[in-house]
Image 1 (tube, helix red, strand yellow):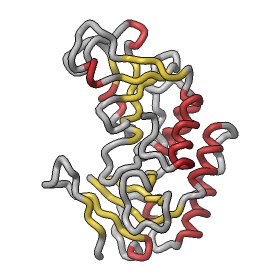
Image 2: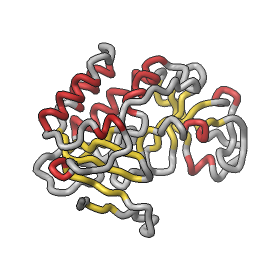
Image 3: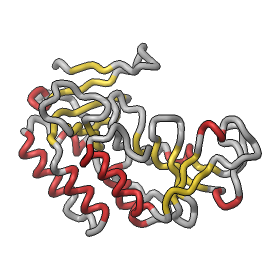
Image 4: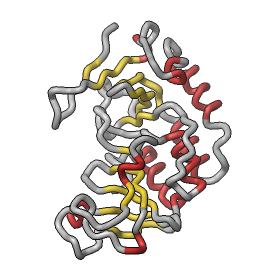
Amino acid sequence: MDGVIHHEYFYPEGPETVEYLLHATKDCEIGDCWMASLRGLDRTRILERLQARFASLPEGPLAILREQILRLTPKSLVTHKDRWWLLLSLDPSSATSEFGNMLMIPSPNASEFDLIRDAVCQQFLREFAGACNTIPPSNGFLWPDQLPNFVFRETSDNYGFVPDEWRDSVGFYLPGNGDVLVMRQDGVIGRWSHETGWSSQTESPFTQIAESFAEIVPDYVAHFADGAKNAFH
């Protein structure tokens, strides 16, 4: 079955990212149970599935995000390195899926996210860990199996200087510019700067940007409401 192949700019040799438009998914072999349940469905029925999936999200910032996502248009299923996403379009009139006009969300997962101490962030990641807005996927929220690789435990060549207050912070989002959004053990959200982290062993690469994860969810929602190229920049 034919799909649209998207090549990674920095790694043109692959692995490829393949996008299957909804009308072409009926015969897809999909090794992801929730994604497989969308196979062959039209946009209306997929939105119904999403509405049922998000029904348990609590009132507050996550409910606002849910309502914004349900305004998007299901367009395709995307696979890369054995992972799958549902691609929703911000601009139904656009013929191509590209950076800035789409959101890709993965299947829900049952991970405990023990590294994350914030309850709102845990709920968010159970639905959206792996979500991104580039194709091929190169930014966005980390997958559960990636989180242990982004724990800032101590000063090192990889992370630079790690002050005591930021020790054991956990990265959870890659903006796509080399930086990492992190959560401190007390729930405070910060940005780790790759420019400082890779160049200095004495200057802190961390900057606080919010008191909690709930504070930054509106920034993510604004990305879809305003058609911004990326969230959290």
